[in-house]
Amino acid sequence: MTSKLPITNKNRLFWGAFLLALAAIFTPPSMALEVCGLSEVWIISEPEPVDINCETGYTIVFSSTVNLLPGAHISEVYGGFGGGNFSSGGYNTINIYAGKIDTTLNTTSTDNVTVYGSSFEPIPGILEEGQKQIINTNADESTLIFTLMGTYQDGSPCALPCYLEYGGVINLNVSQTAPEIEVFPATLSWDFGAVKAGEIKTVQVQIYNIGTADLKVSSVTLAGDAGFTLTSGPVIDPNDPNTLLVIAPSTETPVNYEFTFTPSADGPASAVVRIVSDDKDESVVEVVLAGLGTSPEITLEPASLDFGSIDFGTSVAQNMTIANYGDAQLMINSIAWTEDSSADFAVFVLPELPLVIEPNGIVELSVVYTPTTIGAAAATLEIGSDDPEQPLVTLAVAGIGVYPPLRQINDIIAFYDESVQNGTIQGVGPGKSAQARVKVIKEALLITKCLIQSKYQRFAIVALMEIDKFTDGDPKQKDFITGPAVAELNAKINTLITTLKTQ
Image: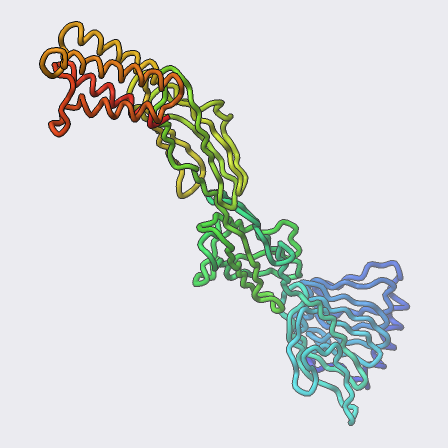
């Protein structure tokens, strides 16, 4: 029956010398060494490293370099002398990158043994966390027996049953495989600056994995003022592990999340993007977003225009201003009269649109009134802008078209003469007193004309008010004249008074 016990130092020297002799006699130096599927494999003084990536039986190594690779299996199944054992003698270099040894890894103090892994489990009294070597320093020089558990660099499990003789060393080459998150903007902050109400500004938060293992992102969240929004990026449900965001190591292409800032109010605003992952050093990364909401504020000064009485056929201009008292540019998109506005009003030299007014800036407009009809006229000027609170403001405009005072007094005198001639105006009183009163009114009208011609409007108003007293039909003051045309005459006189007062 084939023994499964490890080879000891007492018989290793004998077998080593015997095998070296056989190798010198029977193995040509240039012959490729066959290692797969054999019950016994002798690797003796090989000039080149021997790679084992298959299943084989008992393996003994003398003065050679052997690499155990993925697929290597020193198996008991093949039996043979010491089946499942990997033993060494002489000065060997043994690199174990992966693979399985069923019975023992038997090494001596003259071997250079290295196990390549990503992590190894501590062994009480033998291997502590972070330790790079296992050394047999037993005071009684006894063999150190243990099983090295962990994970190889390729991610496969490591379970090596070890017989480490006194003075022997097993090196542990731990290649740390861990994710490492990197987030851009690199400053972990982004200031959108001043953003006008209604505008949208965007930033991308980019997540990279510059580590050596998959990075698992469990959540990307946004918290803060209402103006900030997460608009695009992979959806992660913290309660569903199937939706975790997995980023492969050393990936040059980032995972992008897009965030926008649309101010909901004037003033400073902020929010925080929180990224949670399995990066041990930075399990939580926060990116601070900031911005300043701004908006224009339109104001019309004055709020309305009243031209008063303007002579028929003449043009008069009044100025108004469009002011921007906000902290963002004001965009004027339209300036137009409403459909029911009188055509007697116009904006002189309408500016080219759209018109931009800077914060605390003004634009002056000139509104012209040219009466083409007698009487009151009105209009409404509508001004459209991007003011979020007042997108449309209005300017009320009014005026009265009148004949020029001199023309009015001439018309009154002509109307009076015609009315006296056709008998629709007569003097009050007997005999000559009636004629005298008709003459007094005529003389008062002529005096008023002279005052108007001389630009003495105030005195002309006084004269007309005296005429009004004797023509208004008020019984408190007896009229000088009577007849069906007196009321119309009085109305003309009062219209002239109004005209003179507004000039």
